[in-house]
Image (cartoon, rainbow, N blue to C red; front, side, top):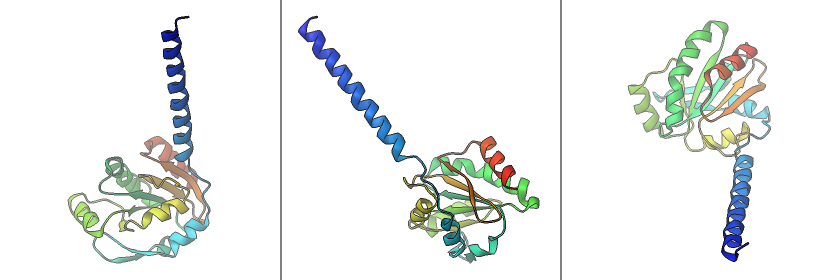
Length: 177
């Protein structure tokens, strides 16, 4: 084999090796950690302002099945899934489901967003500190959107990192009701 060909083959093998290692690291980084159900207790211990500035005690939803959706106005996938969440809130409200949007954004941005785009579920303001709450739910990367389905007993039953698949989320909700 010619020396130049060996160099190219070696460079290609090295590039593939680094690429494979990078993909492995990336896949490990964005896996969901095991969620501690104490995250739900923490959630129920909080009060957050809604989009209109009124304080909402999350403990008021204890004992109900919940879909907790972490989002931000600057996150296109987050905004893209909101009409589906609104539809699900309407579809499942009679069965006790409550969807909660927890915005990891400023109160001003969330208020302006809510004025332009009304939702059938409450949009709450956690601010940048809400990222830590997502981590408690097992979202180690802090990426958005992030959705958790919580049963009536306060146990996390399903989590989705990234834009959810409508059928997957509806199946998780149905299993929780």
